[in-house]
Image (tube, rainbow, N blue to C red):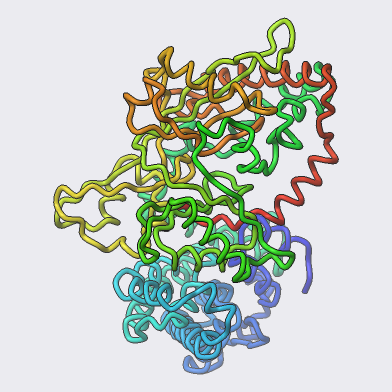
Length: 605
């Protein structure tokens, strides 16, 4: 039976519920008040399996087990309804459903194991799941995978990938079978029992609201699943709920749409005032769109005085999107010629940073310390990347620069330092008995972004850090990668302001944006001594001090309005001076091209 209602609800409530709703269209629930007293109560399960009251309990159980292999959750709910109406006993409903669910889970594991035998030999799998990664995943399943196996039973849509993955990676079958058995032992009575206890009341409400038939059963399923998922989150994921609440009340963790929604109407009004959308894309002629979408990191660095910039060069793949052996050899020779890497090819004296030329949010930034790793990484890349000398300085800052036009536009004006963001890299300190995972989960700040750190340190999460050992939690100075942003006005000095003006004095077409700079330490930053510019961000850059945890949303929005006002003034002056800027259609084309070239959102080192 086909209906737009199941499809719509499936889109809203997720893939697991989609199968339930679709399956309930095949389950025939007959209202009690219209059933003939001479006919035994019955129901048709997914797959056309009819269960009647006059069948033997063993056959009823077999039919329920077979039904779970077709649509698991729909059959479990149907079993609870049948037990409530007296068609089958509650013990038969639980036993038949539980056995079928357990056999289905074991079948998923075996299916994953069978797929691994053939798939591991293919080049596609070897590139994406090399043997060392498979071994790490297998070890994780052996030590901590039981948590995922148990809790996936209570999280919609997660069982299929986890159970197949357990089989594919070769996790121990005995351990998997044991933990799955315990999960089914808890899950089945919960679903079937809750349906048996609440199903009649919910069905009565549904029938009075939407009528009889499968639609009433659909409403019952939605209500039951929603109630159970809410209860399970509150009982088993209280920590996750607490973390989400903590992130929700802190502006620095708000989603992008929530941060920018109040500013968009104001920005649109300013675009109209200053001559249209092209105004904002005329600010920085060193980029085709002023650095609005997918700005080239290397192009921005090339616009500045080289003595202030960390040395770098651009590597681009060939027409097929790959770096061939000749290109990789040329890159290695270039590194050796610059003297960045030292004489030992096995372990370079100075690491290099490899990052997407059109990256965003710090994704894909890798620190490479030897030639073999460098060659392996280039063999995996499919888009232009910047290779840059690694700067070991302990103090990284975001310096927002504005060459404000004032009364008249002068592209040679010295400009000013608008704001300073001090980027503080997070650390954990070992105590000699806690694992890295436990240290992250206990830290009041790190736990708010624990998924980032869990991905980054996947292979080390179960390592115990020696007492007093400090571990730096990242190298990319980006908030999305776990870096703490605080307002850096305490670092502002006349010397630092002069350094910024000098660094941008000869900038060709750069009038507005953020410089990400690394100094040896905070004192060197205040002296404006020896800073190396790592990146230049254009008109879409943020004054990242607004993410200071002590700032609120109102203060952050005031900061945004101030620097965006300057951007519109600069853009209007640039257009008056003959810079055309890029229109909306051109921006959309650039966005499409950027999405094709942009690297996958892989976690940074």
